[in-house]
Amino acid sequence: MDDISAEFSAYMRFSRDQWADLRSNTPLTLSQGDLTALQGLHEQVSLDDVVQIYLPLSRLLNLHFRSARTLDGVKDEFLGRLVGRRPYVIAIAGSVAVGKSTFARTLQALLSRWPDHPRVALVTTDGFLYPNAVLEERGLMQRKGFPESYDRRRMVQFLAALKAGEPEVQAPVYAHAAYDIVPGKVQTINQPDILIFEGLNVLQTGVVEGTRAHSPSIIVSDFFDFSLYVDADEKHIEAWYVQRFLTLQRSVFQNPASYFHHYRDLTEPEAIKVARDIWSRINLANLRENILPTRERANLVLSKRADHSIGEIWLRQI
Image (cartoon, rainbow, N blue to C red):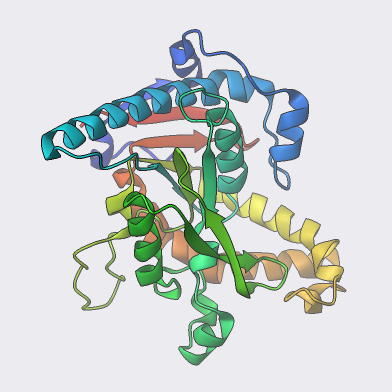
């Protein structure tokens, strides 16, 4: 994590060991086999990580969930009618290649093992990107992943319907190999106890940097009950991004249907050069301009070390 600055005065700081002490008697419900199935490319999650980091976190979120349900009951009593249970929404933000997806899947698996909330759904914001045809028409293909490349109106509509308790809501589906939205395909969400909403810019305020646009009256983060930011030094994230690119070049990129098929025959030095260029022009720029500035809006910040393990945790206290 960067040196402590003024915006972090609102946070309580925990070392890995201090955070682990907050597990209390939360049981370990995942095996090493479960973790192997959940982890992504070059993202190792050990049982030690689960015991020391994820179990205390799942306990904290369970306590928040139960409190939210109690408040929902208070509102029902005040209104004199049964409003119904609304999903508890957890947001996960952070850079490309920082390990958000593996983190989200692991958290989903753990939370679903609590009897209070066995139904935990996971939706990524990739599905809310505009289709490539729209991005090309608007000259935004080189800014894919930046706030303006998302259909934020559709994102808000999805979350609003979910929070309103609608029995079924649908999210678009994104295919990473094709690097595009899958036409006509949707992910159907049926009133989960918890929804994990994971993406680069989920904590954005709604104003695109460098524009005169006014902040909208309703933004995506208005629907979140709890938010997390997965953090790491830029040099570590770049190294993870390059390594992932090399792995994909030897596997997914070999498929003629892959959007990046034209990179399949690069030598390793050439592939490293291309990966670093993409990282610096697009992903690092997005991190610095849009993603990192939202870190201070998160309820919890988890700082990863070079080996993907979490070293420090920051919990917002105000």
